[in-house]
Image (cartoon, rainbow, N blue to C red):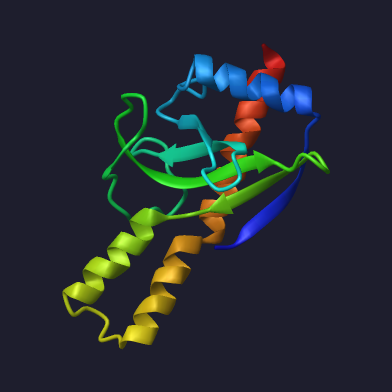
Length: 152
């Protein structure tokens, strides 16, 4: 999956403050935007997970909202994650569209697209990486979170 670094850079104390605020109020973004603090099981690094809903999704979104958002959230779709590189302070982003991969798998199982196995795997990988609109949405939602954190 493709990972991006943005121009975002935060000192550790600011990152910790954002994580604490999200833990206290996982619906901090309001307007049916959902963000949660999760710990990466491989690295033990805390990161932010962003979920789309029918009322707040990337431009051109065409997938179902079938994932239960943690902490009693509604059904949504995981769009991606953001975490802070401790050495540089850079915020890293990664789009991971499970909903896109599920849609490709359903099409493949239904015979749509007439793909062989290799084409199917490539299509799933492309779907997981999302579109430029998905990446833009992820970084914009993060930007709103930072703005709210700085404003309060």
